[in-house]
Each structure stands twice: as C-alpha cells, then as structure tokens.
Length: 461
Image (tube, one colour):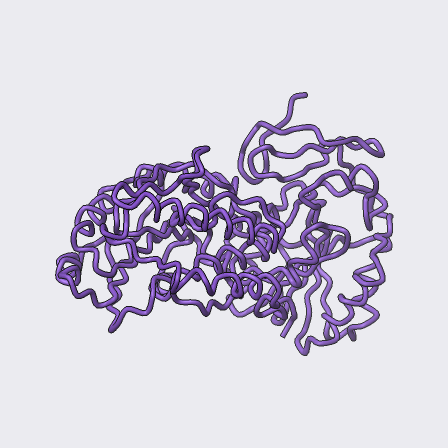
C-alpha cells in the first residue's frame, strides 16, 4: 500500500487498521494520527450525537454570555448547527463555513469549532488559518469526537457518525495538532473520562507563541553540590542539539558548602538564568519555580550531581520534536532490578532498590499504568502539558505528583533507556526513606483519586 506522508509529523510509515463502509483507515506509526485514506464527504448525513453530548453542549452554550461564532460545514442537516441555532438567538450566533475562513472575518466573542474540522483535507492548515483569524483575547473551544488508544472499538462502530471522518485523532494526536498550530493552554474537559472516544469531548485552547525553533528549558535545582556543579553546568552549556535552542535555569537554594559562590560565576551567562532562593525548600519546590520561569515550549529536569549522561538529551528531546510523544521518561532500567549500586553501602542500595519496585508497583496499580521508572530525574514534556494543574508538593514527592497528574491528564509517558551511575549518601544523595518514603503511600493514594484541578476550563466565558 502506497501512502502519502502523515499530515502532522511527515512520517511515511503508516499501518493499516481496518476497513468499513468502503473506507480504509490507517494510523501513523510515529505520532498515532488515524486517517481514512478513502474519505469522501457525506454532506447530507446527520451526526447522531449522544444525549449526554447534546446535554453538555447545551450547558456550554447556555453558560456563555458572549457572542459565539460556530465554525462548521454548512449545508445538510447538521445536528450541532441546528442545536446552536435553537439555543442561541440570532443576534448571539454567527455560523461560518470552513471554506469561507480565508475571506470571512471572525467577530468578537467566543469561537466554537465542531467535528467537521476532521473532515478537512488539511485540518492542520485550517487550524493555522483559524489562529491567524483570531485575536489574542478570544477563547476557542473544539467539540471533537476522539478515537481511543485501542482501535478495537473502531471495528465495531463509527460511534456518533453515520459516515467516517477523514481523520480520527486520539487525545494525544489532537493535542499535538493544536500545539503544531501554535495553540496552547489546552485543556480537555473531564480528561480521565473522555480520552477513549465514545462521545463528544470539549477541548479549550488559546492563541500561543509562534516559534521558529523549539526551545528546551533545562531546569537544574542546586543545593550543596560543590563537588559536581561546575562539571554538570558546563556539560549542559556545551550541549548542542541541531534545530533546538536551550535555556538553562539554575535554581540555587542558598547552599552552605560553597556551591552558591560557584553558581554566581554564571550570573549573566547568555545561556543561563539563575533563581536565588532564600532557603532550601526541597527539590520539588525548586523545580516548580524553574517551570514558572521557563521560556521554552519543552521542559527537561536536570540534577547537578553527574548521575545522568547529558548525551541522552538528543534521544529524549527528539521524541517530542518529532511529535512521537508529549511526555518522556529517561528510564534507568536495563533489565537488572539493582538499579542503585552504592559501592560503600550495598545493603542500603538494595533496600532502596526494593523500595523503588514497591512504589512503582503502587503507582501503576493506582492509575492503571505500566511505567518502569516514574522517579527518574529525566522527565521531558511539553510545558503546556501541565497547564491547568496545580502542584503543592515540595520535596521528592513532587516526582510522584508530576507523573501521576500528567498520566491522569492523558499524557502517558514514553520510556527511553538512559545511562545512569548512582551516587551514594556519602557522595551527596539527599532522598530519605524515613523523611520521604513513609509519607508517599498516603500521598500516592490521594493523588490518584482527588479531582484534577481546574476541571471547568472547557467552559466558555
């Protein structure tokens, strides 16, 4: 089967999924976007949206006080357009056809884009055009039917539509389509219940920054790392990745061993931004401050202790810049459960290795994951992935909070093997089982079950 390149990532490797109703559906093996390669528009068909979907759309429209512009495909009996016209008075609703976006101006108020976006020949180009026609103060909401990560259901039903769409993105693929079109502040309403595509979903977004090149913000928390800081920072400074800019954010937590003076030497360096903390409040607190100061669209967390290899940056970052993944973990596992090998403390090392296995298993059970190393330092993700999430933990428990909340929001990490050489407590390791580990069980259970913050971000103003 000869297939053209993927709309999103340009990959030419696409795999056959299924055939139904004279349609052949394939998915990109790189980014996961599904496409019906035999698609023909069915303008007269009615979309059979579920009662729940219609109820939620009704609530969305009713709660809005602004004028609404509905972007759709005109003509035929389109249930969403008819629903909007029924609920909205004529002076509050504009209906704009996708084909007229080039010439039609979008007025003030909120914008709603319906499922017909996925029928366009190039929805990525349509999204770019939409962004150009909007102004920075406008909200945009997408009413989209998502495909699940498991394509099995596609063989049984076309869900709400009597005819297939041209594209069937899952949550991650649609999220990447929005990022690639320079949208950000992206939020899937009720993400845990809506990632698997059995009904219409509500996704909100705002106009984002247009970048010529991706930028990675490397966040380096530093506290009492005198023996390793200089070498660590210089390795990162000297690191170059083709087509990618790097910002280094050092968060210095008022070290007492001379590290603070070493950090001061880099004040004013063109690649380095320094955040001076008045007191050490924990690694998680430092990382959170670094994220706030990040200018890049990609976040990478980097310790200053030489346990990890800077040369692994290329593989980790390429997962995001190629649109393969939104969230990457640099896995330290190579098949041996004895990940930590402290030459001067072998018993303590094995104790921590067993603790690692326990907590990985606990988190996987709590959130239904299959991760191997969620506690690795190398966590790389689009900065926008954490939009709408509020973080509260300050120490090493932030590792748990970050991974659990990102996973629950629908960003399931790709794990890439990385080089790792553990250091012992005599060499400066700071995590404490008594101070940290005992509280993690309760926190993990709470993080897995509490509501994700800002769950109403999918509503119009």
